[in-house]
Amino acid sequence: MKKIAAILLFLALACALIPATAAQEIEIYPGDAPFYIVATLPGGFRVESSTIDEHFSLTKIEHITEGNPSVVITTAADELYAGRNLSDLSREEVELIISEITVEMNDPVSEIGATTEGYEYIVVNESTQTNDTCDTVMLLNGYFIMVHVFYADNSELTDEDMQIGPAIVETIYIVSETNS
Amino acid sequence: MKRKLAFILVVLLIVSAAAPSMAYTTMYVYTSNGNPLNMRDAPSIIGNIMTQIPNGAAVRVNDAYDDSWYSVSYGGYTGYCMARYLVYSTITPTPAPTVCPVPTATPSGSAFPNDIFYGFESTYYSAVVRPSNPAGYVNLRWAPSLQADIHSHYYANSILTVMSQNSLWCQVLDEEGNIMGFMMRQFLSPYYGDS
Image (cartoon, rainbow over all chains, first blue to last red; front, side, top):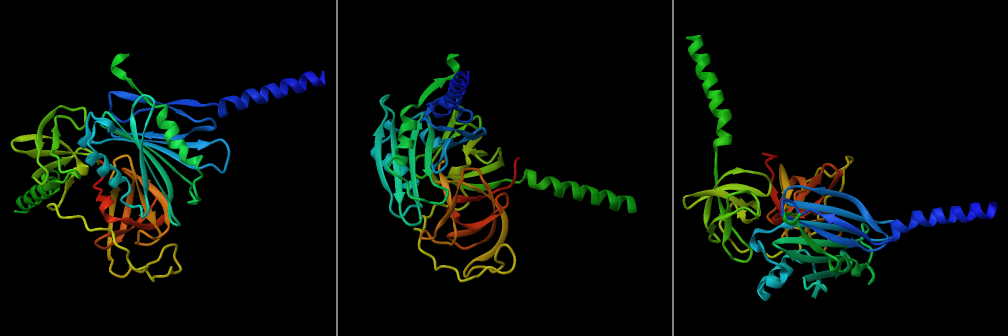
């Protein structure tokens, strides 16, 4: 009887832990856009808080265990790039965006990647004594999406930490609200 | 006589109270990539484009719809433009960030230092955070220098109180978090409250 109770308790605990550690799909509403974005958080992460207004949204992500970096996903419209994706921009325009993202950085490193869906994104990171951040930036239909990864105490990001942003944007897809 | 005087005073009061809401100001288009700025029929990038305003052009700002969009008149059109591309002065090259001397002021008995940092002028106004990328963030630092340690990050539309400033930096207070630090002035715009 005790054995059965122990097995049941183990199963209950396992069931409680699985949803928290499994990858989780979230919806991000970029202000007044006629679409929303679906992204999948890596296992162990969950939404801590989310705020949205007409033009800007901010979603804070936290890990179920301590000692992991803070992750903030922000979206905002930009008139200058209305209706365009990163891959639609000229090299000069992409360089301008990188220079704007890195304007406060002393020693930034940037690279351009692409998701399997073909959406391009920029990864910018800096690791100095005063700053250690990794920003992954995407432009979708004129809306910027940024995944900002950092430690509150400015601890050094690990290689694994720096994969969080690209891993999230890799899963992003757009759902048009007019299709429903 | 007294009635007449009272009537005139009331009229003057009403006129002076109404004046700020009727006031408009001149601002200039400043797009980072030099492209023209769209004027739309609604305060949203999904609004229809009415006309395009060249970079550097002067526009009449009628009202602030909110922190992100202003009602603007230009070339016979009246519509909405994104506030982040409107500046108060004509386009001048943005000064490159330079390293400022580390302040020597030391905290007094109060929670925050009372001293004004060398070269800073005392101010007191609310400002809204405007990162260079609309989805980005701005660093709050312990001292007015890009080499100074970062305390925290502030995202678009955060409201801070500017306590003092020089040409490059603002000493700001986050009243909610009770934190004081320094932020680059180019990422702060005066905040006039929700319209």
